[in-house]
Amino acid sequence: MGVLYNIFIKLFTRILPAIGLLSPKLKLFVNGRKLTFQVLNKKILAEDRVLWFHCASLGEYEQGVPVMEALKKKYPDYKLLVTFFSPSGYEAKKNSTLADVIVYLPIDTMVNAKRFIQCIKPALAVFVKYEFWPNYLKVLQSKNIPAIFISTTFREDQAFFKWYGGFMRKTLQTIDHFFVQDKISQALIEKQGFDNVTLSGDTRFDRVSHQIEMNNHVDFISEFINERLCIVIGSSWPEDEDIFTDYINEASDKVCFIIAPHEIKDSSVNALKEKIKKKTVLYSEKEGKNLKNQQVFVMNTIGYLSRIYSYADIAYVGGAMGTGGLHNILEPATFGIPIVIGKNFEKFREAKQLQKLAGLFSISSADEFAEVMHKLVGDTKFREKTGMISGHFINSNTGATEIIVAYLLKKIDENSENVKR
Image 1 (spheres, rainbow, N blue to C red):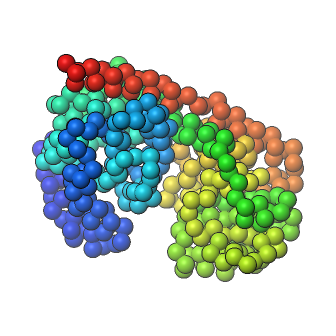
Image 2 (cartoon, rainbow, N blue to C red; image 1 turned 45 degrees about the vertical axis):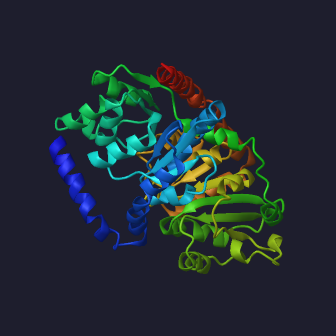
Image 3 (cartoon, rainbow, N blue to C red; image 1 turned 90 degrees about the vertical axis):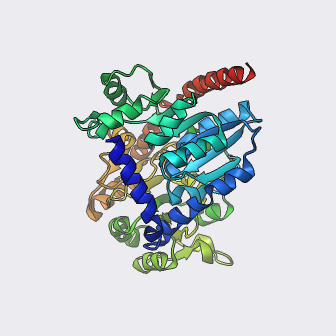
């Protein structure tokens, strides 16, 4: 299987230029990787000590942030390198000041893996949640560089646990330690004979719990809400719009709505605006407008959603009405508000947990959306009780970062001692 994997990866690398012609996103995927070694050679010097974090995309990056911040605070003289697989992660965070260097991870060929590791010589490598790249992991093991996976989850349907998964199980043997999110993941990996496993939880809870301590004030949002009950609709897709627009069009003037669509292209935003009959203002058109006279505010920009959730009385989180995947429910939950989502969330453990606790409601139609919203808007005690459940859910699941960082500090110190010798 290892031979077949490497043949496939080499073929994939050869057809990448053609793949880049298929869409703008794939073009970023291809062209971004052409610059990786050029950037590394410029920004990482031979004498630099490096901590390497790999994130598949934006969600994994957010999971890694609390750990990165803790290590940067403890070891300011180390350079923090962050790599991404996906353009959606890299493009969103390429200018972040948290990391010293941010690049795409070259495709997992043995040549790339050897060159990359030789270039950065990391003290350790941290993979956030997923992305088990066999050649990178093999090279790290050969160089005695610890590879640690954090906030990881395992499922029975993954190749590791199938009869044909021997090659991938062998890849797991190259990993120094697993920090897993839940008992199911722990049991699955331990059943395969691994004892280098710690049940730590999910670092995203630590990440979002810090948001409530930050300054979340946004002047124009305060002006817009004007003491009305506020429903925030975050990261919505067209499938979500089909569910909530009728309710908005029939809503009382005492309720206002902030919509942060996932897609902010002009054509998509204008299509959404045309569906809404209430007075609506776009972020791009807000200057000079009397915002308090508007009932719907469409955020056709990025970077505000986590703070806007602090203004919400109720949040609808998009993505689960279609098949694209549920967006982050923990960001609004940390502010102690009820959460409403679509119907397709079976792979999202935190959503299933919060639903069992009655802090989250799943709907599958416009009628169900209206029913849930009427209950939450009309019954203050019910809304507040549900919100308290969400807030407690966040607070009771923090602590993963502390567990992980304690282990990583020990590994970094061990590495420093070996270098001195």
